[in-house]
Structures are given as structure tokens and as C-alpha cells.
Amino acid sequence: MDAQPDPSVAPPGCGPVHVHFVLLPGSLILDWAGPAEALRMANQRLRDAGQPDGFALHFMGPGRTSLSSVGAMISDIAPLPAALPAPSWVVLVGQPGAITAVDTEEARTLLHWLRGLRLQTGRLELVTVCAGAVLAGHAGLLHGHRATTHHHHLDELRRVAPGCDVVDNRVFVLDGAVASSAGVTTGVDLFLHRIAAICGPALAARVAQSMVVALRRGPNDPELSPFLCHRNHLHPALHRVQDAVSQQPQADWSVARMAEVACTSPRHLTRLFLAHAAIAPLQYLRRIRLDVAEAALRAGHNVTQAAQIAGFSSDTQLRRTWHQMGKPGTPSDMF
Image 1 (spheres, rainbow, N blue to C red):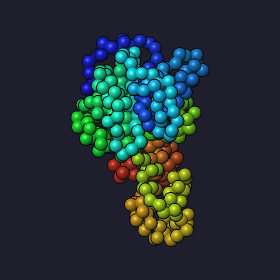
Image 2: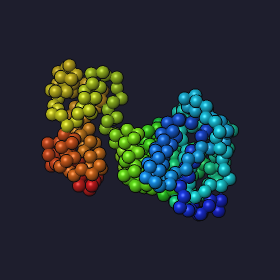
Image 3: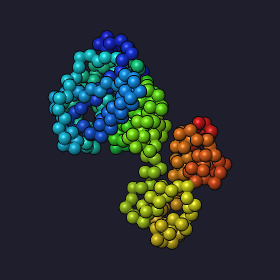
Image 4: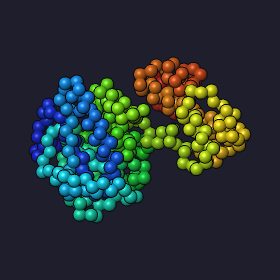
């Protein structure tokens, strides 16, 4: 739940949203550089339209310099401020490693500062990317909130923030003054969503096009899409088939045609799918097509158009597959 207003935060005005990226030593550079670029591009589009910037970017932390995850030194980092203007977002990002280290002097300084924040929707909000949610959990900022993090850190987040409702398998989660994403590229998805909320979906779409983000994912999308699931194997022929299906889901696929791509028999291909991908070939195809259809519906296509784009023989087949795969509602609810 949102806390009471913090007197150290100025009243909201008509100016830009102040976005404060907090950088610790080793911060994953894509966690913050990707979202920062999305905000920069949004500002550029606004300027091109003769409008003021929508976002003011700040980079701060417990030290004046910080060695990033890839070895590049980031300098001129602003100190952690005593007060923040409103509206402000505090952005926490992940660090390399299986466990988020909080026993360093820099981490202890940051946690002390975070514990003094009083979150309130529209005034002071928290945004986490990847294991940044774990830092927020250590600071007690996620108590009573729903949040997600990178799938490698879900159990860690549950341990350090028992009062948080940790959500599995989501690209990002929005809950009042807290927005959290699964990590790395999903931070861009979250920030595109927030840009759309403030500057409009048309501008966010132009930013996505500039960033060559083909499919903008939403808060109800699973972190591991069908394009990524069932790929945790090393079989080259099977990967070749999955690549072909993913690139042309609307093609007239059959197990026999997939087997031609793999240079094997249909029966052996089915055995390969079950042994290495834990799914049957045509079931995999249906999952890919359903994901493509759902993206088409979100983009504004009607059910018939989405079915054609994804390779379903009819909108009836799309609706039947939608129900069989356990999707909530109906395809018509998506547009």
C-alpha cells in the first residue's frame, strides 16, 4: 500500500518526471542503459513535436564513480540526495551473481537511504529492473506489494521480502507506487509501457520502432514467451526446426515438413521434441502461433486478421486453441 506523503518530496508540478537511476559497483549496464535510451528517445520525439521533455534523467549512487558490469567506468555519479522532486522515479537495477550482495559499504549506504523513502503513486515511485527488486526487498520497500524479478532471483526475493507477493513468470508487474520487471531486456518493455502512460501509446510505439523492439510485451505476458520456452537444449537439428517455425509460423507446417528441415524422419523428430524440448512438434507450433496471434490482437488487428497472421486456418481455430491453452477470456477481449 502507498505510504503517507514525505515532506522532503516537493509537490507535483507540470514539469518532467525525474528518473533517478541508482548505480552500485557492478550494476548491470543493460538494466539501466536500455531504459535510459528509451526515455532519451521519448524526449527527442517530444522535442521534434515542439513539446518539452517528459523525463529528466539523473544518475546517482553512494560513490562518485562506479565500475559497470562490463568493465566500463561510470563517472560523475551524483550523490544520494536528501530530497527528491515530485514526480520522481527511483530505479534500482541488478548486479552480476547468483545472490545480490548487500554486505558492501556502498550497498549498506544505499539501503539506509532507501529505507528513508516514502513511496506514493504519482509523487515518488519505485521502479526495479532484474535483481533491483532484491535490493528494494532488503530495504523493506516491497512489503504489501506485488512484484517480480529475474527468474534466478525469485526465491531470493521471497526470502528477503516475506511481506511481498512475488509473482513468477511475468515480464513486469505494476502495483501502485511500485513497478518491477523481470530483468535485462524486460526493463525496456516496462519503460515503454510507462512512456505510453505518460506520453501516449503513439509516441511509445515510435520509440519502440526506433529501438527495433519488434514485440512490446505487457504486464500480463509471461517472462519466458513460447519463442524462448522449450529451447533449453543443445540439439542443433531441433533448434533448426524451432528457428524455422518461429520465423514463419504462418507457413503450412506439418510434422513431415518439420522433419525435412531437421533432415530426419517424422517419427524421430517427434522423439527429439519430446526428449529435448518436452513438447510435441505440433503442440510447439500451436504455442508459437498463439503467441503471434496475441501480439497481433494487441496491435489492433481483429480476430480474423490475427488468425491469418499467425497461421491459423480460421478464427474458429484460433478461438479453440485459445481456450485449449487456458488463456483467460476470449481473443475478442484483446482489442
